[in-house]
Length: 262
Image (cartoon, rainbow, N blue to C red; front, side, top):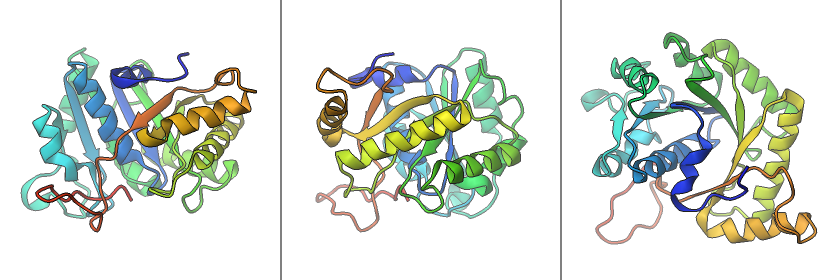
């Protein structure tokens, strides 16, 4: 497996037409979903991003709707007066988008709300347990509450599987502290995800790294391999740019305020 994925090759880590991101609250699912959507679209693919976060009234991928639509990415989410409602709304387009992907017409990224509460909505969508159609990826962020140990992470994963009626088939290492993230924190998070993988017999599909930290993270991992490149078995490094901003983040004059990853 290629240990690093520059540029548009990021999207190659997705093996199936549909990718579903689940995990703890604030684990970073939304930022990953948006970045993957942009990468796929940059390769010329038809992309649909489904916002299934029915838990939080804010901080959803629908907060980037102008940027997504400017790139030709279809966003499936409640609109109009229901756009920010804290309601269990599943729009009819969800099943249609997944059906198109199953027929080979485009790719779908599904951003799900946090924990078992947010994932419950998946249980109303049939056909997601087909591994040829769907990757269900659990995002591991060891700096979130109740996600500090492999045991706690596995417990949450099993609860999500139970209420969503799906099976997780891959892990994503995404331990971070927003702007306070360091290469050591990323490396620590990768070790945690690998521990979860050993406990659950699930592969770590990729490790998420902010683009500005990519070189430092790669150097840190190579040092662990005694300076002979990345250690064998290191998952691909997915570099991402930040698209979802905190409401109080500094903005350049004229730029739009975006919602938060939290």
